[in-house]
Amino acid sequence: CVQETDAAFVLDLTAQYSWSAGFDKTYKIVDNRVIIQFWIGPIPITIWYEIPLQVIANAKIDAQMQATAGAKAVWKIGDAYISWDENNGWKMAKPLSLIH
Image (cartoon, rainbow, N blue to C red; front, side, top):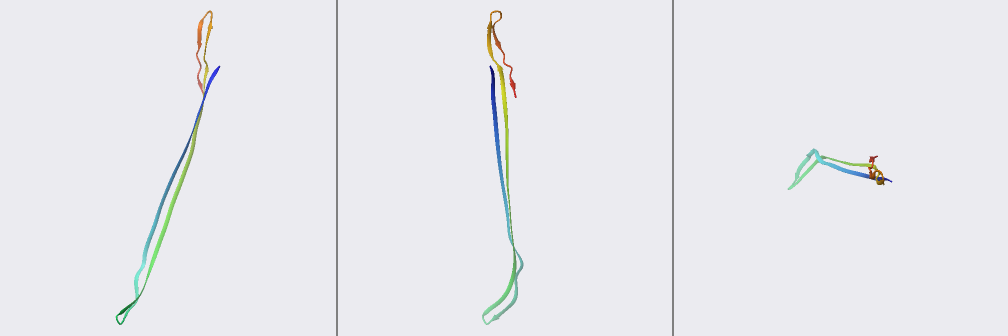
């Protein structure tokens, strides 16, 4: 009677990484440039212009990794028994182990 043991394992690995960055900046290309300025009596009149430049940038990175590893083993222990005969008496057969 050959004894045999089967064993196996599976390992599933999952990793996730997420990174993001943003940039939002307003640059004043021309800042409050007066074109006309005068008074009408007690009321001041000013006409000006300005040129803003807004830069918006976003970056996002998503990464995912998956791995599966496993192993299987078969261990054949062999025959294990005790016998008796009149000349030799009791005798035990030693099993011969073998792993695949």
